[in-house]
Length: 111
Image 1 (cartoon, rainbow, N blue to C red):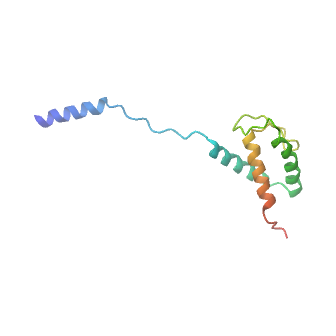
Image 2 (image 1 turned 45 degrees about the vertical axis):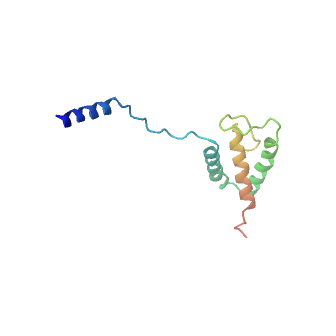
Image 3 (image 1 turned 120 degrees about the vertical axis):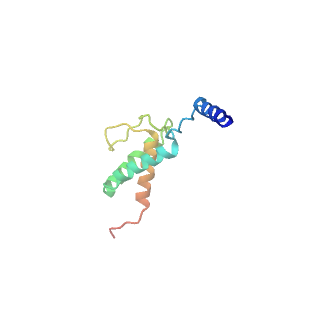
């Protein structure tokens, strides 16, 4: 009898206890956004010839040095002449600059 009563109370407590919801996915914060943009631009820049990379880097400089430039994650505010017809987020253009610098600093494999 005591065992049945104890089991009754344990089962009742389990049923009333609210299960904790599983943790959701992490929000896209600055490190994940930067990583995503860097991967995207690396895949794209690999296909460009050196003169085109230099041309885009030259056009990107004035955009990044604007006094109103913000490294925003998603809002597409900035256009780079010669890049494409789309506006880009500030964080995306910072990642593009980082990728272009890396390609510029890398040793030339053609020589």
